[in-house]
Every structure is written in C-alpha cells, then in structure tokens.
Amino acid sequence: MKDSTRKTQKCGGCRGETLTASGPFQAQLAEISKKLSQISVLETKLDRLMGLQDTVRHIETSVQHLSDTYDELKDTLIRQEKDISDLRRRVETVEKSPEVTQITVLKRQVSELEQYSRRQNIEIHGITPHENESLFEEVNKIARCLEIPELSEDDIDGLHRLPTKEGKPPVAILRFASRTVRAKWFRETKATNEQAFRE
Figure (tube, rainbow, N blue to C red):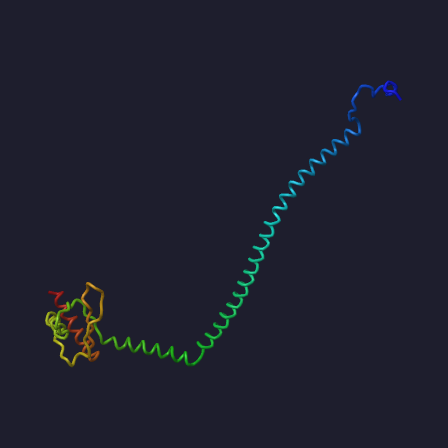
C-alpha cells in the first residue's frame, strides 16, 4: 500500500494527533507512580532499619551482660545473706554460752574493783614540774599552804605524774595508803576552806 493510501485509512481521531493517556489508563499510571514513590520511601526506611540492626545487636549484648552481672550479684548477695545468718546464729550461741556470761561478769567485777581502788586516789593539778623534783615534798607544800597536816611516807601508797598535752603541767596522781587517811585529809582540807571563806 502506498503512503497516501495509508494516510487516508487513518481514522479521523488519529490523523495528525499525538496519542495521550486518558481515561482508565491515566488513573492506572497515577496509581503506579504513587506506588513507586511509596516503595522508594519504604526502601529509605528499610535502609535506616538495617542500620539500626547493628545498634539493636549491641544493645542486646549489653543487656545480656547486665543480666549476667545482675545474676552474679544476686548469687553473691544470697551467699552473703546466708553467711550473715550463720554468723548471727554462731554469735547468739557464743553469747549464751556460760563462758561468755562468766567473762562478762568478770569484766564487770574488774571494772568495779578498778573504780573502788581509784577511790583512794586524788588528782592534783597545777604542780609545775622541775628538775630533781620531789612530788612528795610538793604535796606537803600544798598541805602547809592549806594549813592542814603534812603527809608522812606511810600515808601514801603511790605518787606519780600522768602524761598530758603540751603546754599544760602534767597531772599528779596521789594514792593514799587507806581510805581513812584520804577521808581525814579531805575533812581537814574542807574545814580549812570553810574557815577561809568565813574569814
């Protein structure tokens, strides 16, 4: 067929016109385009999720490590609580034993005896130390100043200084030979002081 014949055989709608999408074809094309753009968005999200997969794996490893550590600590705590409970039982058993009760009684008795023995002591403050001092003579100087009888060597059982802080004279401890001597000395000291206040 000749070209001129072909041109004449075209329908009226097709002659000289370019084909354009219309009708249902146009709607299908728009739907496909929309689906393609959604696929593109999904691919982007999927890429991000694939990147998060390593992070999730790292978090899972960390959580597992923390879980293992927690289990170890829990086991340790349970063992320690058991040990503490065992120790409490042992302490209660020891405390209830007659030996411990006896030791407690003996300690109390020793403390009472120490306290009782200290009743014969007096502390003397303010005696300045010097070379070749005689504390016995210093105490008798105090007695002379207070106008009370001086002590004899038989009246005292011990006389010495205690260690003290720097800058203060050390305290002297005088232990009387008996409570009777101590009481007599104090009575006379008190009487002298009362007389001094009256004058």
